[in-house]
Length: 267
Image (cartoon, rainbow, N blue to C red; front, side, top):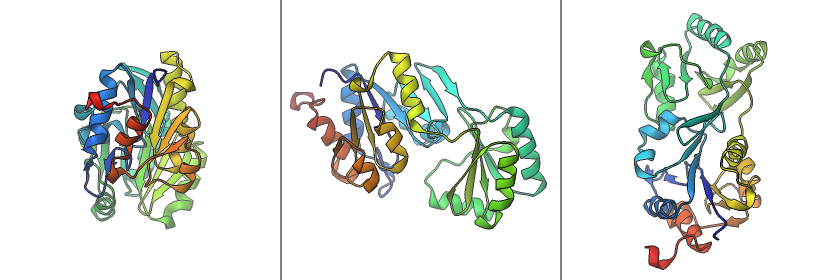
């Protein structure tokens, strides 16, 4: 497998095991081994940079690039390849609307996340469901551009917020029972993969991708060697080149060995 030059890796349930709220240790070890051999590592996650950094991801694994917010932005070698921001004037009008009607919300910026947590009950419910570093308070926000705006709300608010999204030609996504997200476009992980390919001058034969869920399918379709964790979604498995073990059984690490990217002498 000397042709593998880059590995794209999902985070939740691929590298980070929520049952133990920690990284799979052999998965971390495996990625460090292949990086030492010269393979580029790119995290490709629905999470924000702020979230990944807050969970100590970048201290454990020497990622060369980051595709964050489900493809909303791409950074490699400390260069911003693209960032799909909401236009600032639209962002400001939405913030005014949310403040007027006392919604709590997150502003997802390239490196930081800021929260207006006026409604503590629904905010606390969200952070009990999702293992996330708590954002920076909105009082420290300095008018940075936003990749997305996450609004803490119930489903009965959807029609009102969809009208708001349609007014500004934004994509509306409800991703939990207490949160929706507005973005400038529908984000896909594949956009980050394509941008990394162009930057590194690679093609699908040179890349491997690890994931577990439906949003990983667009990433899987971009590379030849797509690997779905055994704990993954059945549809994601059907799009994968190879299905490995579950995360608790060291699926990522075992797949690296299966493809001879790690050998016994490396361990």
